[in-house]
Amino acid sequence: MAFCISDIPSLFDGWARIRHAIRVYHKEISENQGNDVVTNVASNVVTNVTSNEDKVIALLRQDGKMTAKVLAASLGLTQRQVQRILANLKERNKIIRHGASKNGYWEVTD
Image (cartoon, rainbow, N blue to C red; front, side, top):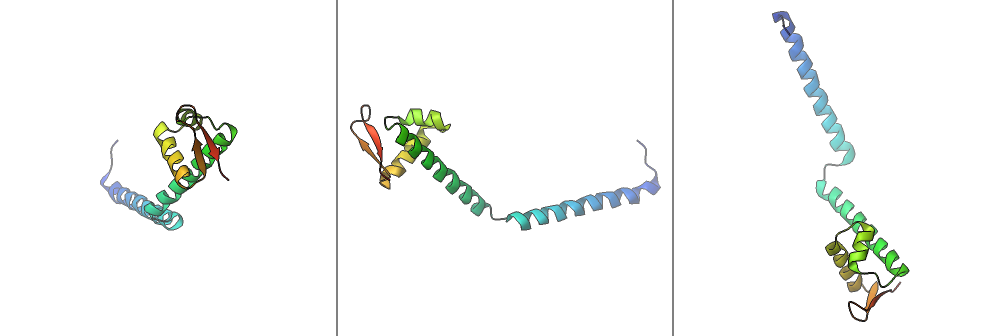
């Protein structure tokens, strides 16, 4: 593709308009969505954790003998994530473990 010397100013004009449009777009995005990444991440984490806790409680209400491994497979989480959720729920007295780890069951205390 060949360019004439007379085309050069219009090429630079085009790039300037593109750069300006990108700056305006980024400014609008940051003004509309908020630029605080920490707040956005924290909000998403709280929502997901609360949602996962509610799902674990619902499953344990149906079958208190479910293991962390079965809960993890049911929810699409890792076994370690479910163990943390169970520990958190136990600490807040939302669930109680009765019996041994192999023969016991979970009781939801709402």
